[in-house]
Length: 327
View (cartoon, rainbow, N blue to C red):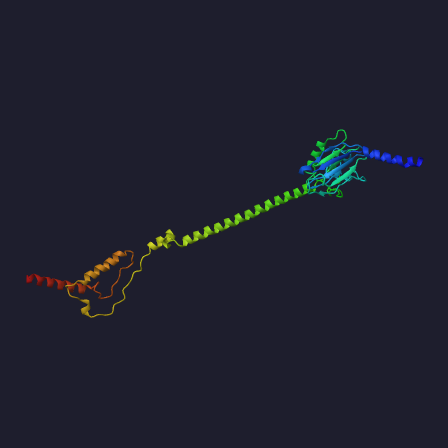
C-alpha cells in the first residue's frame, strides 16, 4: 500500500495542477492589423500563453519596458531584444511566421509558460511592425507601467532589432543608440544637397554658353551689316571733303601735226573758230580751279593768231560790203 501511495500521490498532484492551469490566447496581427489581441494579458504562474499568428508576416520577441531602470537615465528602446538590455539572461523569440490563412484553427502558434509574476513585455520584430507602427504587448504589467507609454516609445523609436543582432556600431548605450535608418536618411539628405548643387552648376554653365553664343551672333551680324552698307555712307567727313575738293588735273593738248593752210582757214559762212572758242571758254569756266587754262596747239582754229584774226575780219568786211551792194 505504501509503494502504491508513493507514486500515485505525485501523479494526482500533477493532474490537479494541469487541470488548474489556464490557457491564454493572444492573436498576433489579427484582421491584418499591427496589434496583439489582447494587448494586455494577466496570467498566473503556471498558466500557458499561446500566440496565434495571422497573415501575413509576424513574430513575437521579448523586450523591455521603456522606463526600466536597466537603461539608467535614458529610456529603453521597446523594439530591442531582452537579452541585449540584460546581458546573461535569455528572452524568447518565436521566429517569423509568414501566414497565408486567416483561420484560427490553422494558424501557427507559439507557446510560453508563465514561471513568475514579473512583467513580460514583447514586440513584433517583422519589418515596420514595432517601429513605426508600435506593435507591442505585455503580460502582467507592473504598477506604474503604461501600455500607451510603451506604444508611443515604439512608434518614435530610432530603430528595431532582431534577436542575434548587436547594438549599432555608433554607440553602446541602449537608450542613445543612433538608428541606421536615421543615418541613411542623413546620408540621403546630404546626397540631395550635393545633387542640387551639381544641378545649379550645370544650369549656370548652360546659361553662360547660351549668352556667349548670343553675343557672338550679335557681333557677327553687326559686322555683316556694316560691310553691306554703301561705301559712301562709311566715308568719314574728312574723306568726303577731300573728295569734293579734288581738282581735276589741267590737261594740255598735245601739239598737233602740221597742217596745210587750207585746214587752218575755213570759209566765213561757218564760224567754227567762235564756236570752238566758246566751248573752250565753257570748259575753262566749268573748272575754275584749274591753275592754267587749256592751251591749244599753235594754229588750232580755236586759238588763231592775231594775223589770222585780222585777215578774217577783213574778209568779213568785204563780204558784208558785197552783200549790201547786191541789194
